Every structure is written in C-alpha cells, then in structure tokens.
Length: 205
Image (cartoon, rainbow, N blue to C red; front, top):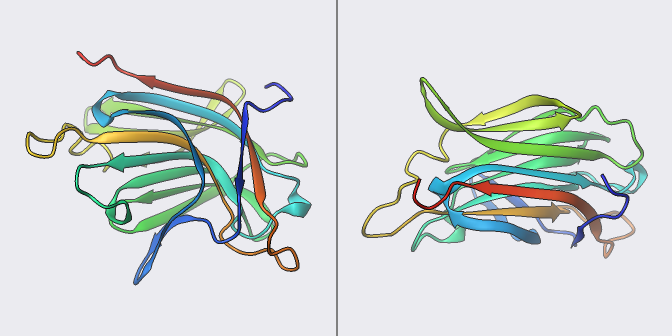
C-alpha cells in the first residue's frame, strides 16, 4: 500500500447510512462511486482504507465500502444497501457490516489492527454454491481472507423485469460521522482510500 492515498472523503457530523425502526432512515453520507452497472454483472470489489488516529475518533465514526441496489421508481429511502468497513465503537475500531433489506442490522468483529490509524482491506465477492447465490464479505490480512458475513438477499431478484428494467448496483467508498464531536462540532472526519478494485462479468454472460 502506498503512503499516499488515491483519494479521501470528508464527512461532517450528522452523516450516516442507517435504518432502524420505528423511524430512523438516514442515507446522507458522502460517497465516491467506484463503479455502477447491472447487479447481475457484479463479481467482486475490494478496497483499502484508513481512519484518523484513534485519539481523534468519535463514537460511530466510520468508512469503507458501500453497495447500493437501485431499482426503477424505488425511492432511496426504501432501497437495499450493504456497508462494510471500520467503525469506532466503545472506544475501539471494529470491522462493522450493516445489511439493509427493509431494516438494517449490524454485526461487528475485532479489527486486529493495533496501528495508530485503524486500517483495513475489505473484499466482497459473489458466491454460488449448492444452496444458491450470495455475497460473501471478507477482511483481508496479507494472503488470508477472514469471512465476516454472507448476505443472501442481494441477488434474489437481480435480473429485474420487463416493466421496471434491470436492477443496478452502485459500488462506492463512503465515510460518515453520525454524531457531533463534543467541543469540535464542526470538525469533519477524513477517511483515506487506496487500491479500489471492482470486477464485473461481461454483459453477454
């Protein structure tokens, strides 16, 4: 990984991607699009990213990969999405994955990075086995991929239909700072990104 990031995203306070009953529905985090094509053509995505030093982080500060499923005539507030990356919680950086079909759920696993600036590489890959198709999400450490989450709903109706057309997938980098930082309410979170990779199947497959 180069010492110089390919790009950065700055997130002000009160930005998030989160949906929780009965009424919380946020989708206002800044993003940088890495690729956008029909969902049925998605194969794999990979991204490395780094948050600021732990001493500068606020509760729920986060950054990583975002997968946003887009259907014709469906408002963003009702769309499916998956985000996976680093999130600062209980005074520690975690690898967090949030999957949202109707409502969002959240899982965390230890990051295992003791560096000053929490850093991770996340990979998400289409999988097909004897039981069906899914999206597998991994934390990458060197040559090893540590499985974090299997997501089954995302490819359930990926073909779309003749009335509404194809289902699209936006793959993006994102950053979010859901809460204001006490005494530094205007301070923004800066997340650095390296080595983006998005692979798609050819249109004819």
